[in-house]
Image (cartoon, rainbow, N blue to C red):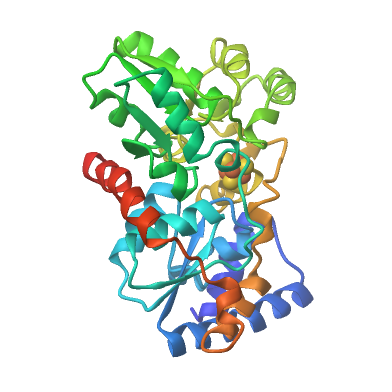
Length: 343
Ligand code: SF4
């Protein structure tokens, strides 16, 4: 099947359909992106929270060379032979790609794509925490900026956080910056290890909103199973998963859970476009979600991705380029490398 037809098929499965006019508009952008990627030896790495048109991969006629979660994107970034990585995600993710690929040029289609978690803590805050808790290892969730990571012992993503925490002998660990994820992990540790977590007060402005909306949906759909991200408040986890089947975990855990579950209906407590990912993967299952979008992730669009590729080799390129100072890059590489070794 030609690329454009494949794309429409996958995109329609994710979104429930598309008009001819909208399809023609998207396809003309995709065609130019394909040409520019080949011309500049560029790859597109795209996060699961991107709009659906950026989540269709090249195998399905789209332009994303890889679609995944933070850990998958970090690992994939190290494998590519491309000269340019166009990062369709938020700034801390693009910084990680720079740290892992200092010889490549990493471009972010919009530098306004931030993150409430990454912005909640600085390297100076980590130094203070270390002073207050001498000798206690610091685990930084990947949702932190490079200058924060540079002060930490190891990074983790939502997928490998449990494994990484367990790898330390120390009973006490500092976990930054997401307090809800930290509380959910601490509950899990209580049943599996003797670890105690010292937490920071950061929250994800998207996942902290999954509260009574999820509980109401859960009550209204008694057969639905519950899918919650680690970053959702602990009260929501207790109010739903104490009564129903489901999971609290990483994006990868959520995808694996749906793959293995026989249920036909799920309630999703994670970013709205992960719902589109799931619909595209499992068209015979139903995903109900309050549809809360991350305004930072939504700064990135297909059109801005095209504009980024058009800028390559022009005076505009630096506007998109992500740079991390060498001294910070070298120090932030240590906890990221440790995470990849432990994953
Ligand atoms: S969804 Fe939350 S954690 Fe992810 S980028 Fe947006 S604000 Fe940050």
